[in-house]
Length: 68
Image (cartoon, rainbow, N blue to C red):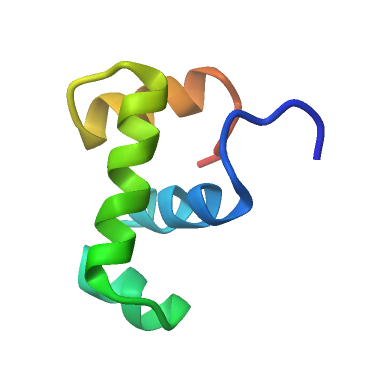
């Protein structure tokens, strides 16, 4: 997987987020709770030192961590 700053799960979640899925959709798709999805999102936001989901998405795209 190289030097990804994201776990595979975090990458999955943000890939769904950029496809316009809600937290609830993602939880259903992955078979996990919405709280778990939100925790993963918060972890990524903290790792990147950004202020929210949209900033996280922009950073991850710039870093080629996720692809549109």
